[in-house]
Length: 233
Image 1 (cartoon, one colour):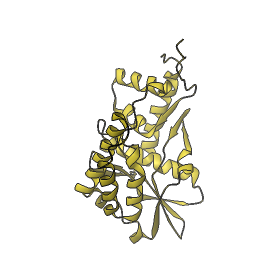
Image 2: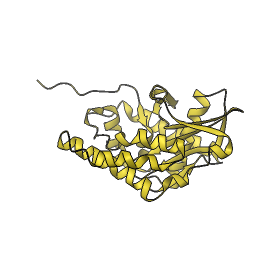
Image 3: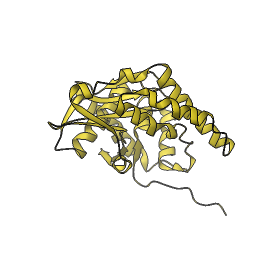
């Protein structure tokens, strides 16, 4: 007997899927919505195992801590073929950051008086609501100053669908909205709302034209919410 497909009744999107949806054509948009609504068919999270190490390296402003992690993963032949493939993907991401010195793209948090640290897992479950869609922003690094300023970093790990300037700034805007909602007592520091697109080799910051970006995000989420009920397995 076939089990019924897992279903999300309410509209939902991760940052990566929202960014991809923004620039996708009609057929791809329908496919993205189907995968979001019926998550049982999602592909594996290829680079998830590398994310904690990357976050720690960004917080420490030191990529040298990535090398032993990459070496350990590269030398680990245990597990199934699939598990080995996942480790190989993580090594690819770590090598990309090390070889291209991508942490140089990050702002100087310490120089600006902000103390950075990798996000606690519990805080990454905080969600953002936009036009009827629950968006999982899940920042990887938080930076705070004694005078109440806050910055956030999102590590974007997608080798197939890289970020453009438009979608990169959109994700950085999501970080700013996330900070405004969940850290309302803090002063959002736009210069330190940054998205690191690892495979694109770029960093994107929250734009000055925040009102326009928020309007674009609202319009995209409204479309997703309007189409949600009509999406079938």
